Amino acid sequence: MSRLVVISNRLADPRKSAAGGLAVALGDALARTGGLWFGWSGTVTPDGTPGEGALQTHQAGNVTLATVDLCQADHAAYYQGYANSVLWPVLHYRLDLADFSANYSEGYRRVNQMFARKLLPLLREDDVIWVHDYHLIPLAAELRALGCRQRIGFFLHVPVPPPLILAALPQHEWLMRSFFAYDLVGLQSEADVVHFTRYMVNEAHAQELDGQRLRAFNATVRVAAFPIGIDVQEFQRLGRAPDAVQTCEALRAEYSRRQLLLGIDRLDYSKGIPHRVRAFRQLLERYPENEHSATLVMIASPSRDDVHAYADLRQELEGLCGAINGDYGDLDWMPLRYIHRTVARKRVPGLCRAARVGLVTPLRDGMNLVAKEYVVAQEPEDPGVLVLSRFAGAAEQLKEALLVNPYDTQGMADAIQTALRMPLSERQWRHERLMERIRRHDVHWWRNSFLQALRDEAAPPATAPAGAVAAT
Ligand SMILES: O=P(O)(O)OC[C@H]1O[C@H](O[C@H]2O[C@H](CO)[C@@H](O)[C@H](O)[C@H]2O)[C@H](O)[C@@H](O)[C@@H]1O
Ligand SMILES: O=c1ccn([C@@H]2O[C@H](COP(=O)(O)OP(=O)(O)O)[C@@H](O)[C@H]2O)c(=O)[nH]1
Image (cartoon, rainbow, N blue to C red; front, side, top):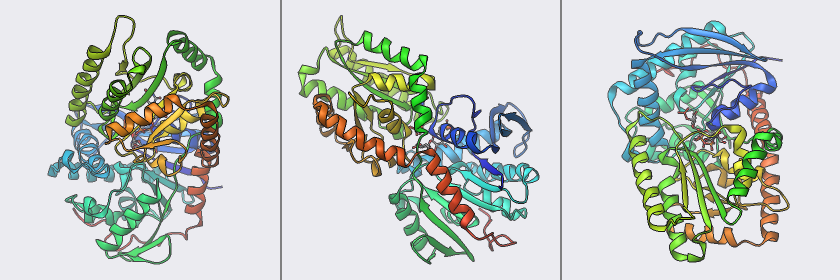
């Protein structure tokens, strides 16, 4: 059996828990098969030469972790810059938040080239290589330019916007062309596949060979949706462990006279957190019977603090949360508990189980694993209700959630009220259907179906596709 090599910007020790869906899912996927996991160490060295970083390897169970440090300049241009100030906003439909500084794209390319150089000597001939996410789109092209011939697949964890939004990226031609150095491109949803294909046909003049293959630049790439899932059994096991049980019991005791609503997100503008707070305020205004009862616990895990848009969001949110507590709070009740800290993963199932309503209301999200975790954490005899944004990738699968438009404050308040009042039989019916879907497409299905599709693709050509590494 060939070895699996996973490459992602963010790594986690697969034996430990991590915040952030990608690290959680890849940790779960790799722990099963073993293999090599390559990426950024998470360390930023204060000095150092751009495009150079020390490589360290260590063993974590059956997984070898190989990581590279980034110097300050590379971290600023590649991670904070091109990845999180250009690609992240554009891919989440937020051109208004993108900062198209020229040195970002140079840094992005420089780090991808460095990763390719560091990784190449670690590769074996029959490795299957799986690259993850928007930080590393040009990596296969850089590897091919160095002579790498192994099969390479790519999975994008974030959404693909419509072609004309992508075309606003000053380097879109170069970036999108580099997808043709992969054998297989996996996306989160069918909507993403439609947008990706339309871009390639309209802007890159690609030819659609069959339902899943695109041809351009003298190369063929297969594109399909592989919606990411969670490890259901592992999450249920976590839910039965003492940390989760204690968390749930403590919350239930504290809120025995209240109805608990829960949001867990990274503090990210894509997650629609201020919109959720406004909808909660509207709930209290329109349905006053919820006063002294409905209580929203909002965990906002710190994320990408050094990027301006994230600091602005934090300020906005603190203002909104303070106002709601000031206007509606009483001596014996605060409507909103806003926690700007990461909650340990082992406590997440307990938090979810204690909440009558799970609020997952992003403005755009590749998938959103919290939506699936919330459902799995529920007790089937008395389950809570998931209120889910129709703009999360998860909404394509989780049709029995209460689907909402997060921009519609009143509609969202009405949906929360429906969730709070939903009879037991309907809650059970919805929960059962959601569980079926989450079980069928779990993280093992995701990994196996992607890797099977990658193995099914013919071995790539001996040379790089002509011009695949076109200069910026
Ligand atoms: O690594 P960070 O910059 O700290 O950010 C954390 C991760 O955020 C994004 O996660 C995405 O992947 C999830 C799993 O597929 C998906 O459910 C979610 O919708 C996405 O937003 C990002 O794509 C990862 O690269 C980051 O590591
Ligand atoms: O304080 C926190 C916040 C989030 N998470 C976990 O981080 C992941 C977030 O993944 P998701 O796909 O929802 O969003 P992302 O942050 O990757 O965009 C989920 O497994 C959460 O349970 C966590 O353990 N603690």
